[in-house]
Amino acid sequence: MDKQRSDCPISCSLDIFGDKWSLLIIRDVMLRGKMSYSEFLHSEERIASNILVNRLSVLEAEKILVKEVSPLNKSKFIYSLTKKGADLLPIVIELMDWGAKYNANCPRKELGKKIQQDKIGVIRELSDDLKSKIK
Image (cartoon, rainbow, N blue to C red; front, side, top):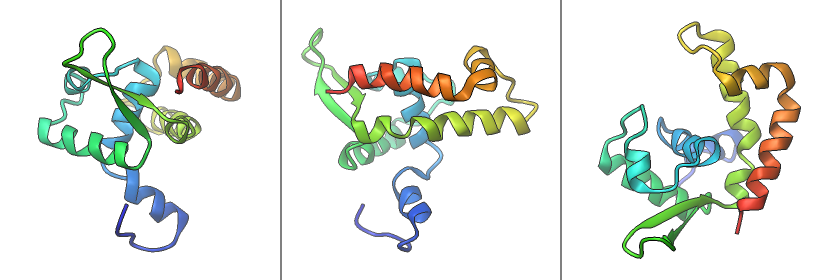
């Protein structure tokens, strides 16, 4: 990212993924197995196509996601996490846990219940799975 608001590590992180959409895209790749533009476009939050293009470009430029031609359809691109992106897993899990804990409109689903019971175990299991998928 070219311009930073400050040299505070939190601010530097938010400069990359602090908008409304980036962590949702990361969540979709990380936890929901989404890989393509059309899969992201059809997420429940209904991101606008121009914003999706922009956020995917930023996440790719920041080396959080990598974009490759689909081996199944040469006219389609797929996105996957880099190690840098996979390292966001504990943050995503903490945000999920915090959101479920303090917002009655965000009930814990299956993964949320597992996080509540054994957060460290869930992070370890998901982290191992992500590491096996990183190229």
